[in-house]
Image (cartoon, rainbow, N blue to C red; front, side, top):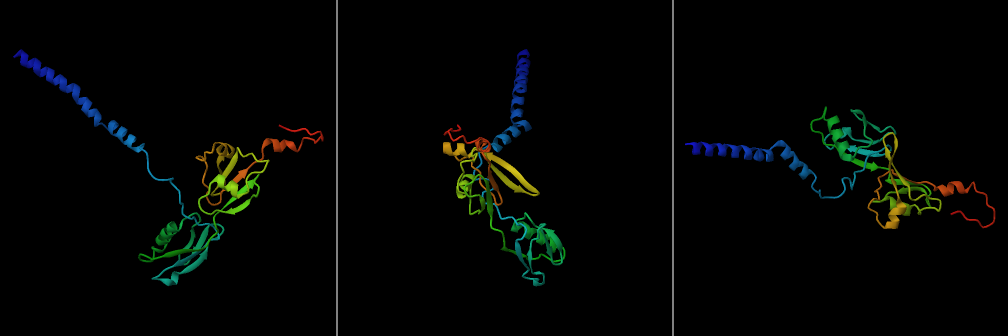
Length: 233
């Protein structure tokens, strides 16, 4: 009898020890750990925004047509403040929107008095994408942005650096609502020396690539020319 009681007690203790271990594997913390590990697994595919859609800007001209209700057809230019004046709807802010986003906006606006309106939007006139090269470039200016272009490629397009350029500190400015935003400083000199363009950034329409003067060029103008063949290291 005593032997049976001891055997039962040992069985209960054994179950008590093993049960928490099984519960721990199925606990919320355990599930979160598994989910976290899954979230950190490598993701396939290219960069998040590799082929961005064109975003509307002032002076763009739109052709808006209604196949079923042509009385609402309209050809309209985006005003300098980013608004358009739509027939029977009024002013609508469209700057910075893509064509699919604009189509959705128009559907909601005209859907208030038209049943399931069919609306076609065509971009008739637009400013070609460009970038600006400023500072110590061989040929600074405004250049058409044709296809995927990086900062290093923009340097070549703009005639390379001058002898006054601080090409270890190339500045990339990106246009944002209300002004400019400094996106990044790039050491193009080091990238070229190492032959590694992994950190080379891709331009977006309206970007400004600026190359400042190096310190030597800034102070050279204040050093008198003695005519003795002296050089500055």
